[in-house]
Amino acid sequence: MVHTAEYLPATGTDIGSVLQGGYNHELTREWQSERHLSKSMFIFPLFISDNDDDDTAIESLPNIRRFGLNKLVPYVESLVAKGLRSVILFGVPLAPGVKDPVGTAADDPNGPVIRAIKALKQAFPDLYIVCDVCLCEYTSHGHCGELYEDGTLNREKSALRIAQVAVNYAKAGANCVAPSDMIDGRIRDIKRGLIDAELAHKCMVMSYAAKFSGSLYGPFRDAACSAPSQGDRRCYQLPPGATGLARRALRRDMAEGTDAIIVKPSTFFLDIISEAARICEDYPICAYHVSGEYAMLHAAAEKGVVDLKAIAFESHQGLLRAGARLIISYFTPEFLEWLPN
Image (tube, rainbow, N blue to C red; front, side, top):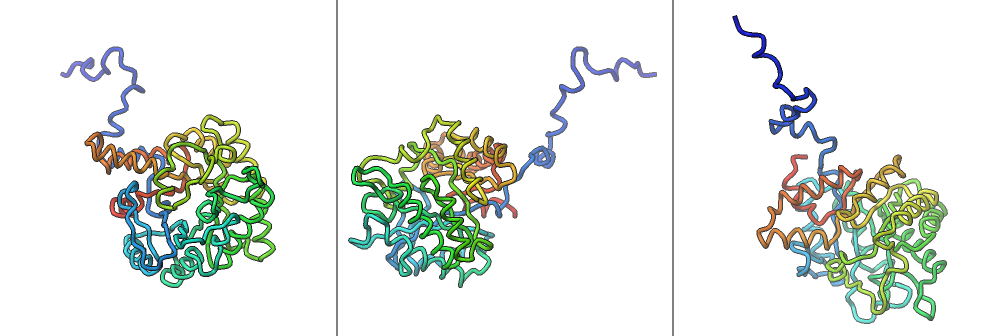
């Protein structure tokens, strides 16, 4: 006869304290994740120049290149074959003298973005095309809107100009416009412009509602050639410590008609993603894993501090835990290889 005491739990151990049986197997560890990374949630940034044969490596962004139109479609084709569902376009005008104070080149029908929309739509009808809407790549001063004589932003003219660009992208076939300028009132003007153009029913507005100023955008500015020629963007991008301002900006953009929300950057602002998921609970939340975050992970991997694949998964899973449902990421090509679906 076996003594009953052999079947009793160890003294001092609460039943609820024993958790490891629930994640001691690879499959059960996967079951413990409330959300899973999938290919469909990734949006890949593409830099497109006005040099049709451009194919330039971005030194500060490992594995990322800037393409001209002749090189773009073959590159995207290789990613679509692996499951790419969405891209976000950034135009990079390189021709001398093309930039001016009002960013005329942003929605030039012969410019890189509008031509790329049409080429990608023709080649990949099911590819979801997001267009970043900003003027910084196209203005001679490198700021995100039109300026007063003293160098400060003219809010009214800037918002109207950005709305004009957004509508022209939608007319060219963009599925989504994503204003990244952070200028007050531009969501309202964009939405009104889309309604007036009878396009609001088929073009999503995905607002960079909580975009913070900071030190993580350097590699992007190398790729997009968009560094300001004077001053900085701290007066219209959010201060890094400003949680309250972020909440107000989220509520503002919802009230003005946005269809989805972007938080940028991501890793250092997980609390803001969580706030967005709470405040904007009925909206898709997108985290932008920005160029500086991407470059840092590559640098750490090159130093042997981390394994690149492992740290990429950890960082992006953190965005899901915080509440994101979509991710703009330079790691998209790698995740298309790593993820089963």
